[in-house]
Image (tube, rainbow, N blue to C red; front, side, top):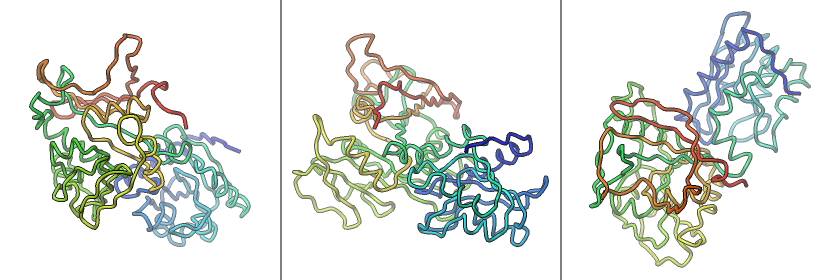
Length: 380
């Protein structure tokens, strides 16, 4: 049964656990980033956060820090402790062995194959268990993981940069730079928190982009140091005809790269470290729903789209974009410049309705976080 203890102390402790969970957002993928506190009375005796894939979960880190003091403690954790063997042993077994008295979880594991089993295992061991405290605040932190578990694909966020008149490049294709250094550093942060960065061959051929996380930009501009051993997201290139040359920066060994092409695409001699997978074609290019399912099989919770107006428009039209992250610069680029999206609409009734989640200033630019209307998002 889902309960919400609701005491002031419990809420303060869980709020702290949520802060800790956010601190592992750059390293935990494909695992959900989780925070954990061990508390006795009003004293926090240890904290833990999810480590790199294959390393310790948040509960284990907190138990290690607490040592024998964990006995009799209350555990505040942002996600139900795991009860199955994966890359690491079950956290439930470690909590039971440590002798904790109480476990307060923000939310159940959304994986339908395991949801509730960890909590039940703890109850069977005589540990007092509550679940549901600050669940509404916990779920957005691991939204991509939740969506992948519930609908079979992760969260897709499209990053766009535009002028005040909605333009993304001059007619010649020149686009560097619309936004300022702080906004571009903020994009590094978005990349670092993503499992995959998706782009199209047109963008690669036009910009010769690398789409890697650059730690020096991330740290210097934002004042937040990267964790040691920065995790580079998977770079995903949609290249139906395999036009991207082997010398392209995005095919370097600096980050893992997946090139998706049509089944009848001509052969291409690409670097051995670049994985190539054939995807069936739809009406106008690779089938985008199949693309997202392919990424789900690779445990991609958070997909950041960085591409041109054609592919972004196609993804939006297909209902495959969950959020738009739009950076707007205080400049005007004129009517001959290229539009934000290639999305032909004829009637006012066809307009795409957006819900604003967040607006904030980043340097001299503005960042909008927007959600398309439910009618634009597929239900799988």
